[in-house]
Image (cartoon, rainbow, N blue to C red; front, side, top):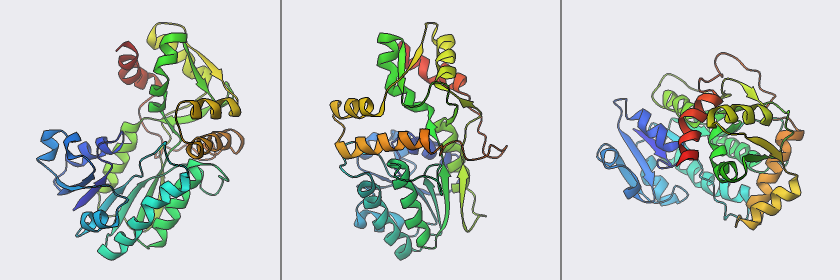
Length: 293
């Protein structure tokens, strides 16, 4: 039995689609089963509720061999670490109590490097808790997602620009969520691995904001430029848009760590951790339709 958490989210939805291509039974944990497409609901066992609830987790993990673990973001949370570990602690109890053998988790780059890095530090603390259970664990370690650019469709339309917290010539890896889901599904369907380890997912290239602006200009057919914003301006904009101060501070601290601690550039690129979807391909297939809609 495979258990998928957050099956209606950006990554979990794609993981679920891919594991359903296999022949293993699948159980999902979801607050609102109505958000699952009808063909999917007919093929999975549903445990309704939040995967921060110990009773829900106990039911969901009963008899499970492998779990896909993802803590959903909550922009209303006053503590980033409190939110992430509030989900993870009961999960660790259920992993031990129900005898789960393997866990595949959505985490981040920066282990051993990141300090006071907001959401990054919280994700790494999550990894520590899961590993302490002794379960076989693979932490998928990512930089920023290409899909984050979808949050900037409105300034792209209105002003022909997007905003960034890093230097305009600072090259960073980014990855597409489809490739993250592919890595996760491959591990979930493979019963041969054991032990604990990391699986970096770096995308195929390192790009600066200036590089991204050039590619978007070519794909969208209109001029696009990148605009750097200082940390205090970023924080003010987040809170002005209704994000809780604690969560906003975590995002600012994460952005600062990416720039100053270089946490996304430290992982050497290899054929194994280089995933296929280029930023140009993603812009053509995902960003452009969203921009034109």
